[in-house]
Length: 577
Image (cartoon, rainbow, N blue to C red; front, top):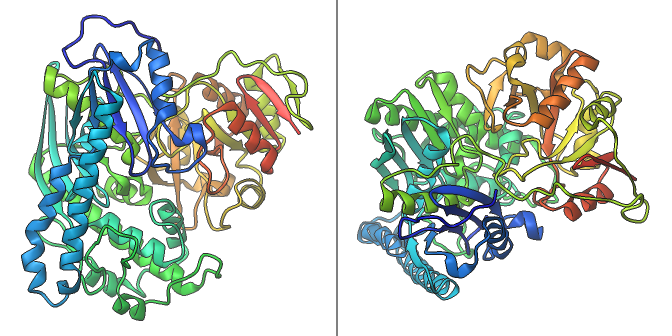
C-alpha cells in the first residue's frame, strides 16, 4: 500500500517502534491509516533481534513514499519513569527474609533500566529530528493493538506478559463511541507477581531458551503428569482475589540482569537439577512442564473471570507474551465466560509497535486508526519476482500455469513444500504467506517435518489450516481462529482421518481460513479437498529451528537449500533441488 501525505492531525505521519529490547518492529500510520508493519528479524535473519529496526523502517518509508524528515511523531513502546514504580515495594522487601537479599539489587536494576530507556528515547530523537518522540505505556500499547485489531465495539482487554515497565498484568475496558475510543485500565498487577516471569524461569530450568522456546515447554507438557508437581506450582503461583502472586522462596525476586537465577535452590531441590540443552528429556521434565502449563491455564482463566467481572463484557481481547500460549487461550474459550476471545496476530512485543502508534493517534485525534482491524498480512510483498531456469547452483525454476492446482497436487502426492506468497504476515505464526505446507494424510509427516525439515524436538506438534466453512467437521472450537492462536478440541472424524494434526493432549492449534482472508491459500485448500476430500493442510512456519520466519526471497531459497523441503513455491514460481 502506498500513500500520499494529505491533511494530517499535527502529529502524523506516526511511526510506532519496538526497539532495543527484543522482537524489534516498526509500524507506520499516514493520514490515520496503518500503512504496514514488519518485524526486523524477517529482514536480517536474527530471531528476536533487539537491534533498531532499520530495514523495517526503511521499507515502511518506501511503501508510503515519504522520508524520515516527514515523520512527525515516533511512538516508543516503553515509558522510562514507570520503571521507578517497582521501587515502591523495596522497603517491604528489605524487611522480609525471603526477599531481603535481592531487594537492593532489584531496585538498582530497575533504576538502571529507567536510565537506559531515557537514553534510548534520546537516541530516537536524534534519529528523527523532525518528530516528537512519545513514550507509550507498554501494556497500553499491547492492549490498544489487541482491541484495534479485533473490530469489536466494546471488549474486556487482558494483557499478561513477563514485564512492561512495572506492570505484568492489566485488565482494561475498551469502548468505541462512533469514531472515538475510550481505553481504561481497571486493574493491574505489578512485578514481582509475573506469570511470564515464572513460565520463562521454568523454561530456562528445563533447558530451553527463555523468551523464545516457551512453546516447546507447552508442547512437552502434553507428555507429562501435572499431578506430580501440582502442589508445588500452587504454592509457587498462588491465586488471590484479584489475580495471583509468586512465592519468592521458589521464584526469587526479579533482578534485571542475567547474573541472577530465576528459580531458587528450594525449587531445584523440589523438582530436578537444571537440565542442559544437550541432555535427554526425562519424565521429570515432562511432569514439571505439565504442572507449569496447568497452573498457567488456571491463572489465566482466573484472570479472565476477573476481567469479565470488572467490565461485564461478553468478548475478550487477550495480548502480551503469555497470550501466545494457545492451550491456555483454549482453556479460556472452553470456560464459556465470553462469547468470543480475540488474540491479535502479533500478541508479543513486536505488536506494541502498532499499539504505540495507535496510542499517539488516539490521544491526538480521539479516534482509532483505520487499517488495523482484521489484518495480519501487513509486511513486504514481492509480486514481480522473476527467476532464471537455475536461480542458484543445483536449483531449477519454472512457472506452472495453475499454481494453486499444481501445489495441491504435489501436496497430495506427499511432498513437503515451502510457500512464499503475498505480503509478509505479522506475528510468530505462519498464516499461509510464509509457510511450510504438507498433507495431513501422510502417516510419517510429523516425523519428517521435525527430523528433516525443521530440525526440532520429535514431540512438537504441527498446526492445521482448514477452510472455515468446514472447520466444525474437524474441530470443536466454537469460534473462528484466523490467527492460529487457540488450541481446539477435535472431532472423532479428525482422529480417524487425520490424526497427524492432533497433539498428545487431544488438541490442535487451528487456523480457520476464508477466501477473503487469503484467496490463494483458500484455492490451494479447495483444490486439495477436491483431490483428497480433506480441506485441511498442515501449516508451519517457513524456517528451521532457531531462525525467524523467512521474510525475503533469498531467505526462503536458503531455507529450501538448507532443509529437507522438497520444493518451494515463491510468487507462483516452482523451485526444486
